Length: 128
Ligand SMILES: [Zn+2]
Image 1 (cartoon, rainbow, N blue to C red):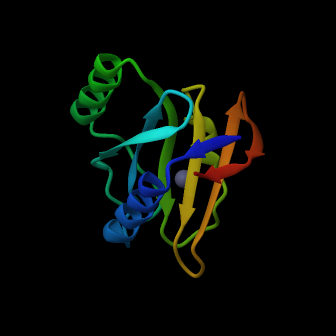
Image 2 (cartoon, rainbow, N blue to C red):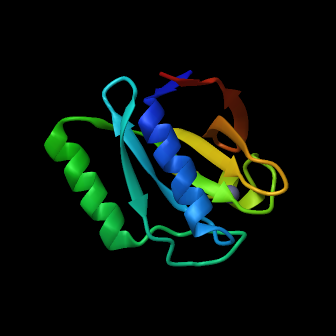
């Protein structure tokens, strides 16, 4: 289970809606729960894929280290898809963190997963 502070959760959803119809992406970090959000520019702007801006990603990693917290999750939106990892998401899941997917249309849906060596498991997402 992953816990996310309500204001961070709302900020994440708003960011995904603001980026619509393109995919939005970013990181959540914290100690035990998601208390920080890093919105990262998608340098592969499309409705079906994302790629973190490497400089912004590095900046986020440095800030996470400086604050003594941990990267907990990678989030991204599926503007017109299901809140489920795509084949590409599964292939590119290099980090051992939670993967949060926010589907926007036709229905807003937020789900969280672990992806280990191609095995996808859903995890409960708790807003605190
Ligand atoms: Zn995806």
